[in-house]
Image 1 (cartoon, one colour):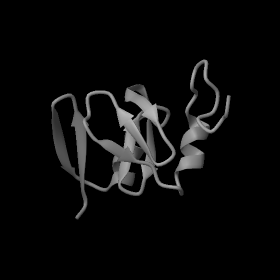
Image 2 (cartoon, rainbow, N blue to C red; image 1 turned 45 degrees about the vertical axis):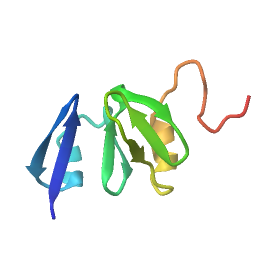
Image 3 (tube, one colour; image 1 turned 90 degrees about the horizontal axis):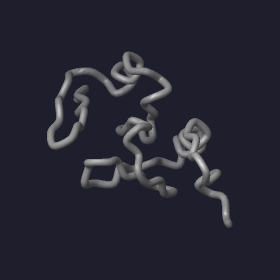
Image 4 (cartoon, helix red, strand yellow; image 1 turned 30 degrees about the vertical axis):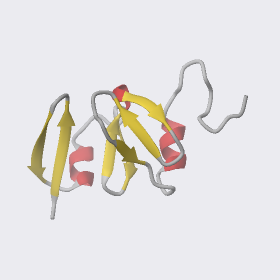
Length: 88
C-alpha cells in the first residue's frame, strides 16, 4: 500500500503516504531517491556501491537501482575521492 517507513537509529516510524509525497516534503538536497521503493539521507551514507548503499546505524544494504544510480551519483559530492566509478 501507500506506506513509508522512516528508519532512525534503532527504530522506525511508519506513515501513510507515498515515497514521492514524503520526499516532496523533505529537504531535496538532503534526501535522494535511490530506488522506486527507497530514498536515503545523504548525511548518513557510509558506503556506496554500484547496486546498493550502506547507511550509518542501519544493518541492511539499501538497493540502488540502475534507473536512479546516475542521478544519485551526480548529486553526491564525495569529498576527496572523486566519482564512485573512477578507477585509480
